Every structure is written in C-alpha cells, then in structure tokens.
Image 1 (cartoon, rainbow, N blue to C red):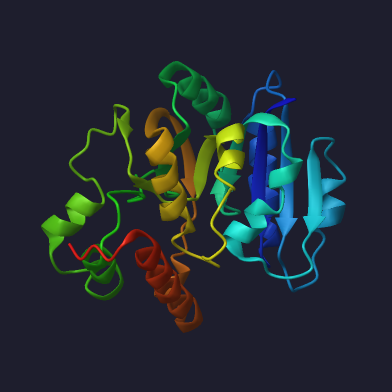
Image 2 (cartoon, one colour):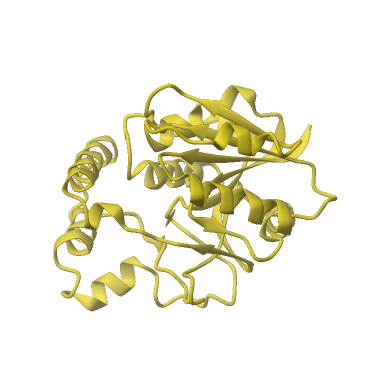
Length: 254
C-alpha cells in the first residue's frame, strides 16, 4: 500500500501538468511511498504519456473523452491503494514538502480531509476557504464583486487567523488531501457536476461524517485562472453546476 496517491486531471494543459509533477517529485520526501496518476481528458494531442515514462511512480491514463473534473478524478477511484489521496490541480506548484506535512497533520488532528495554505505566485494567500455557499454569496462573487464587501469577507473567511488550524466548511478543490477509504466510501465526487461546485459538494459530505481542516504549516502555489469569469462557456457550466448544487442541498438564499 502507498502512503499517498495523487491525482491530476489534465485537459489540454500539458506544460502545467509537467511542472506540477516535477515539483511534487522534487519536494516530496523519499520516505513517502507515493503514486501519481495523470488522468488525461484532453482532446488535443500531447506528449504526457511519454513524459510519465520517465518516472517509476507516475501512471498515465487516457480517458478518451472529457469526463469533467469530478469524473476524471473518479476514474482512478477503484485503482487506489493508499492511505491518503491528494486531489491536485494541474496548475499547482510545490516548493516545499507539503504532502508530508499534510499527512502528519491529518494523523495528529484525526481529520478526514485537509487543505494547505494556498498562495498565488507572489506569495499572497488566495481566497479559497469559504463558508457553505448560498445563492447570495455566489451571486456576489460572479456578478457583483465590488459590492457587499463585508458579506464577501465573511463568505471567504477573512476573519480567521491563518497562522492557526481551523475547520473549513468549503475549500476550493485545487489541492485537497483526503483519507482514501473515506473518499472511496463517499463514492468520490458527485458526477452530476461536470465542472465547478463538485468541490463544495465533496467538502460538505466530508464534514457530515468527519472534518475538513486548514493546515497552516503546509503551503502550495496555485496559478489560479478563474476561467468561468473569463469564458462564457465556462460561465454557463458554472451556473448549471450551481443549480445542481442548490437543487441537491436546498436553495439557501443568504
């Protein structure tokens, strides 16, 4: 059994995937027995298969179609033979041994899932830690970013002390570590969400049976693109996922 499995879902972003894998290989302790899965949803030709052949602990899996974020991550669910499992975005970069720190943290705190300090490329903390979504909060983030600043600060947990650990209702899914058996028991991601809100849904289900906590001692870099704020197609997918989320969990307005 591996100490940790790591899944990265690729979609026409080979350069980012290469950097992510290389940073994980460079900054994870050799004492940690790990296996990295690259799940390729791409519809463009790439050389990721050849790239993975240079590593003994990396597997390349081509899905043949775009399964979405959750579907891509669930593609390896039955293959996992690990104590912990990391859900990692392609645009993540490690510059420290965040994986070892998170694993130790989860054992000490006895939690089901953890999220590290997630920083932008300048070292600024990103607003990826949130209260459970409401219709108002998502509306403000998507349509009225400059309005209701106090409400948005509450939603993004700006009042927390990020030098200390605390429970998180919803952590954006760019880098999450979960106990593999728990992830399997929950059936992985809910595939009703093709893209967006699947992380909010998973966090909510984790917190129903265990706990998701922020770990201040581990840090990763996220080159956050915020695609749905820039492309109309992604925006439409985001709205569809929001409708699915509130349809499942109830239409909490504020």
